[in-house]
Length: 223
Image (cartoon, rainbow, N blue to C red; front, side, top):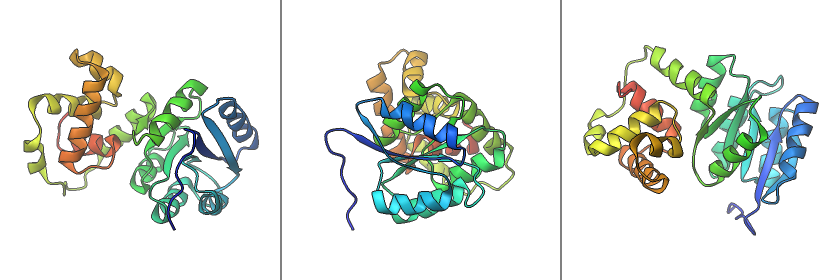
């Protein structure tokens, strides 16, 4: 079955969290914005999988730790059936293993649960445009865990040779968790140029998102 397309620029969001007050509050805040439609709420991972199948949201805000089915496994099941759905993990970022598991499952972004609503909106809007989003603390945890891993590197290092000197500079900054605007400021270039560099880097390295590119860079020692 074909994936539905967004109409009138409205981003359809599914909010998943087992804490009722947090979930309802977040959904209410998101729903106040004209370009966001909260199509449903789920109190657990199994419900999230079912609702994702029924409603095909554009973006899912997914709690990492839930009693019935954790965020990583729910994310894996959803993306296995509908890879165009974008999943942004919600986490207290206290358990590095959980965050790493959601990375492996395919989440395109990570938000700490105390992120202000403006940050959540930025992440949702970035996700639907195909841009990965890491809150600063989540970036620290995700990339910090990768740095500590002792698993042998199986990545093709020759792909690095395809990058220009400026693209290498951009990749190093991606590996530090910087977003496009911050990269642009750091390098003295326009945000559009930074975005173009990031797109080129992902294409040359064959990576699906900037999160994966950051992991690639860290594992190649480009930090």
